[in-house]
Image (cartoon, rainbow, N blue to C red; front, side, top):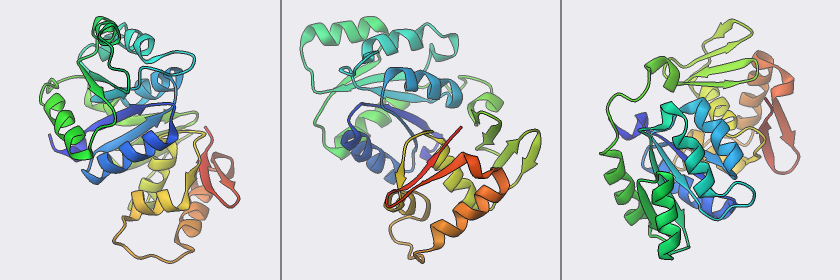
Length: 230
């Protein structure tokens, strides 16, 4: 299984941590999804069925240990790799994490190369057959389904095969509904840092997506970027 087939869910309430981790993991070719609390993590995990989940322990509301316990109580997440990524290093915290069903415990800060090495070691333990192929590749958000294996979007029963960049842009925005993606993040994630595109490229792709999936699903945040509304 190559990195492009691997889905990793990052769960942390600190935006800077999410941005740092997602940048380094995407640079390795992983498919990365983001959540900033336990409830959001459960919702996104059900939608994408990730191979690996990295969870911060200390989060407001539902903390990482409770989130891990809830995930392990769901049959389809029994074999998913779950690791805690946290600044806490106390023995009792690690023990509680392992008792909740975690597979590993990674203390931050951590150097990107070391993190990637730990993640690859964890992924070697992923069972080759986890869930059905049809289930793992479809992201369902309201009346829209995004099939990431077939590059297919379904809205209200109508199938649409989008051009590659439109599909990747939609997948990025839909990976975290409600989260505002800056224009810089979108350029980096969809076009890559070495590709030079015009300033209006994103605007044109957004306009085309709105024509196809509905104006109401992509909202412009003036001066910042775009967000997906399910």
